[in-house]
Image 1 (cartoon, one colour):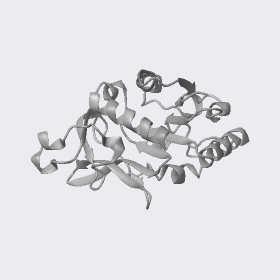
Image 2: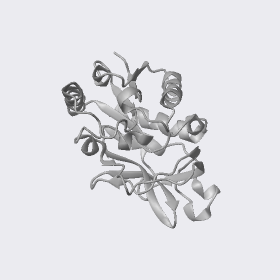
Image 3: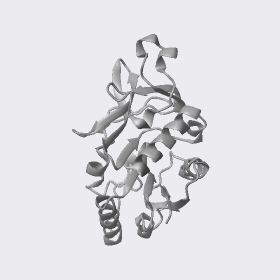
Length: 231
């Protein structure tokens, strides 16, 4: 059994803005350092989406074609992946996975939210702080992260990730999804990570490998993987 399979954006679900091979490699290195078996699969064919004997699937893919060409083979792959999740499979979706699989209507419901064309956006990539959403301070995925009060006293008691990354804003967060991380943009708290339940986490960080050079970002990813696999 493979502990973790990383779906990496190639072909139908790649895009020109994200270095998926680079970020999937960085994720794989972190997973392997945790002592877990890991495999990376490009999304060049529908068969890549079939989890087989994996315990956790990490989705690191893009929106791809606009609009995607209808294809029964991909519809079948989505149905099999959805069935695997219904049967207890675990999913960690990172960064632009909030916009991936636009031809799979169920994906946004599984993820508990989505990127919304025409509304969602981000400012220029930069060093940014992402802090625990109110009420999520004790969530296991935030364990061991530094207190944001060391940077801003008004944020004392809230764990923080500091990374060179994009700050997504205007994401759709479904009712029932639990916000985990937020950032402030134009005076508003924007949700950057959430979980719709015990088997799925969305983590909006991870634009390129500079994000994964951050020790706090890596700790967040490790925590998410451990929490999902323990559920």
